[in-house]
Amino acid sequence: MTKVSSFAQRFNRKVQEQTNAQTTVYPILLLISIGHLFNDFIQAIVPAIYPLLKDNYALDFAQIGMITFCFQISSSLLQPLVGTYTDANPKPYSQIYGMVCSIFGIILLAYAPSYLWILVAVVLIGIGSSIFHPESSRVSFVASGGKRSLAQSIFQIGGNTGTSIAPLLVAWIVLPYSQVYLLWFLVIGLVAQVVYYYIGTWYKGVLANKTAKKHKEIYVPMLSNFRIQSSIVILLVLIFSKYFYVASISSYFQFYVMDKFSISYTSAQIYLFLFLFSTALGTLIGGFFGDKFGRKYIIWFSVLGVAPLTMALPYVGLVWTGVLIVFIGLIISSAFPSILVYAQELLPKKIGMVSGLFYGFAFGMGGVGSAVLGWLADKTSIDYIYHICAFLPLLGIVAWLLPDMKKVKFVLEK
Image (cartoon, rainbow, N blue to C red; front, side, top):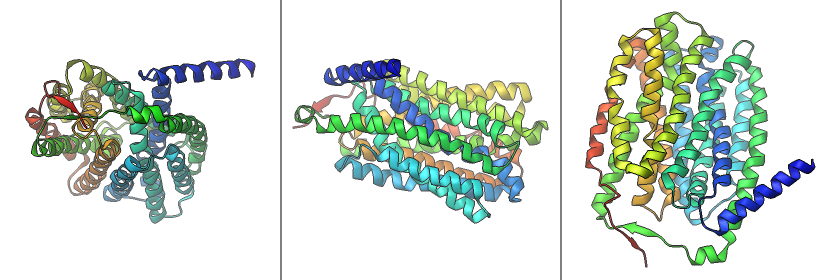
């Protein structure tokens, strides 16, 4: 106990020193990344149990798509509203409230008596996510010390890691037994509350620091309103192409490899894990290179550069499917930290709203994509949707129209 207390004291002292020096507060970035891991782990349970739900409730692919649609829409529509509200009224402990919603969602999902109650359960989990992301992204921004892409990628890698390990634990703990075993994951939610409380306490202290408020400086880009608005639209188009394709993997890839290569549930989850784990690594790499070489070029490479791989995927065998899905995950995920920080630089006075808008739009496109692709899979085949989605990354060509923010002048707002 003494050793734990000593470690906590040293940790708190280190956090305070970095906060006072207004440098990158790595301990807080680490904690918010872990908090993101817990949040996105809970979210990723939903698609990971699709094979179980499909069997238990005799669902078709359209109904699976509707589950994702309800889940993603509930986690997307609220985010810009939450972000806009917290821009004016910061809520340091909002992550705790969000996890309470997610915990109730998991309990309901474990005992869902019908398909309708599954939809209610995933909506609750989606609402929890919509509360978590805007304010957490602002904490990452505040703790960045100017290294915004790196900070955002550290934050994002936690979420991607949680998303990647969920299918493995679901395959180990839930799929061999029954739905009620989802209750084991409540431990994750309870541990998360401790982390969120510490982060909230630190952020509350930052907000209360009158000196920090007094010397707060906001630099705005010297771009016309039209250029800023058109750039935001271009970024949203890129989010559409990225997350519509990602929806095809996260919702249906298990069924694709099971159908095409006749492998088991558990083996299919391993292939999904390969994709999700590679997205976590790609996020960190993308954030580092975004700060170093410029976010426009990382965005350009990430969205457009993955196209040859997505177009090859439907035509290869099982081994090459595993290889390609890893590189697709690495490349396609490298853009998001740069996209989000790029948008925050365009609208520096609306960090919460921008974060909520882009996270919300990403989740919304994932939900719409899953519903549309589920309907299409029922009408055609699960294999066919990967032939169609393969061309989505070609929309990345519009990234060329974005201004190079390294060459844009920023002025201090009076």
